[in-house]
Length: 376
Image 1 (cartoon, rainbow, N blue to C red):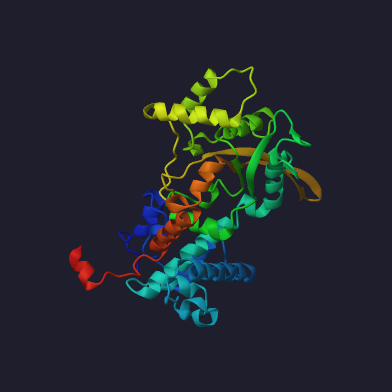
Image 2: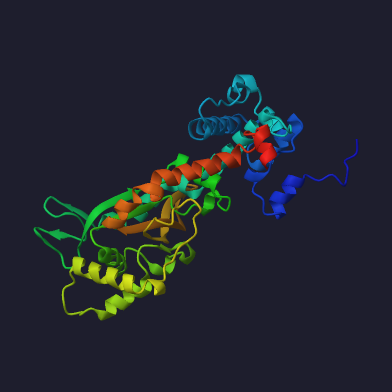
């Protein structure tokens, strides 16, 4: 039968030039084993190649495990026909089932394929290939300035016995995020429609909790003066400052006597008084995040470091270089404690992400009851 010149794959077109992610199309358009094989070959994996087939099944297993552990509600179960390779048969059957419309099996099959897609992209990027080198070159320059003293505690800058170095800053806490876990990355990519794997900018990062509010800005100063970060590599649209308005901080700074050694508690009081008196002029920088509470207070920026990796090509060493992003968060201890509870807490943030990820991947499973349908 001749191909109909007026028959288009509407969802593929919407994905290509309509701005719709493949994660948001309701079903695929694969009707036969041959079509499924051709689709997978173009996607990057040949199911007729033994090594490629092993990889596809590996992604299938990871997707099933993720959905079972993260997205399912009590009493729910993915149909065994889709989780057990023995029952599923060939992997191509999963794609055919994801194209059979208007049934729960199609929704489950499509959901598995979409989560598989996330894993494929997460495990085939630069970070997956060179994670150790990337982490070492980003984190070591920071860690070299973090010191633990039995008397003073953790400091940014060297602790000199009972007395601090002139530039050193006492810290309450330092969290090194050497990498974002795969589960966390999958959830984030499923929850945020605008994200794709290569735009995840916070796989590596550091969170610093200072004793005083003023010390938050001192940490920034220390990073710049000691050439730990290079501000030209900052990604401006990723910066966040919901902690303290920069314009009021600079005004407070101008009012201080530069010849007097700063006292953290006194400057904190000045900063808070100025904010109370000038709240209408406060200029914060908040990057919208639908999952974050407006009560969450912090300073964050994402910058980049030039990574250099030696690889061997035809027995000859060659240097591969590329920029890689990382995140730095800084917050004072008082704000940090507030962030740990209520709507600003990390637990509630994750719950909101999980809800959105489930709604996106398993849309259609929860059909409205007759009463609900009448209400709408």
